[in-house]
Length: 313
Image (cartoon, rainbow, N blue to C red; front, side, top):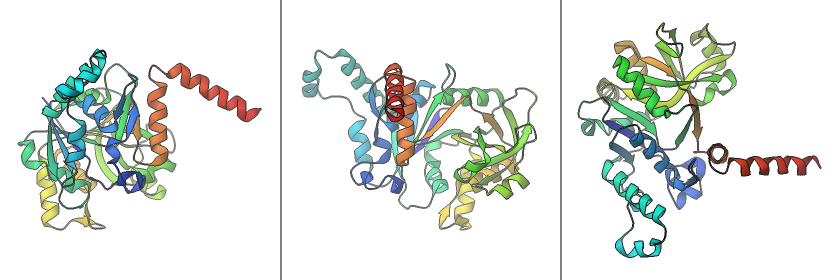
């Protein structure tokens, strides 16, 4: 059973500068599929908690937890007076209180990369397997189960580290970690992984990461949700002590490659879409996709058709 989830939110948000001077990018607002305006991070926390996990470590820069705590709290008695005729808002306030109780804030005191951010939660994880997500990625499932719940269900079947994956064309591989492996016979969307390379070039991918069962120039890239055994923290610690850095950072991908070699890892082709709101274009795409799957879908569709008509006209 997975009890702990780590969400990383300690980056400087340079791709969203200068808006990140005012607010952490993980707190940028989005209108969610339920029609409610929320910070991005709340959408992620809700997905985790709805999947049954109520111990969440949020990795932040020292001092930045104030912004997050300011959001993850319910209304005060005085503030509730303004919402007395809005029972939906009072319910949301209770939900925020519930989320606040689930979150532990852990500092990443040095900007030493994604792997180092994950390592900061080692003691908190208590030698248990952990769910890992990024604080600037939102997921839309194509089925009733969330993408997080899908991954947990796979873990509960195999009790091994699981990486969520998505088919990705060759011209986008420079954006992701990319894996190779062999299909497992139990289910068509499961793979026994044997390699992972961070942002490979095209030649490298075709030489080392081809999966014959996939269409030409299609590869399996990291989707952004992981379940990792406690061994990941030992590997990260060894890399930190050995100064296993790339461009001054402790890379998670290096540790994941060791985890594959030592323990074996299952890749799961998630039934959903990953959305990275950490860039201006990605932020727009994330909001559009959420809106297209929510109560304003018809209005969005009508607006899109109107805009197309105006351009043609």
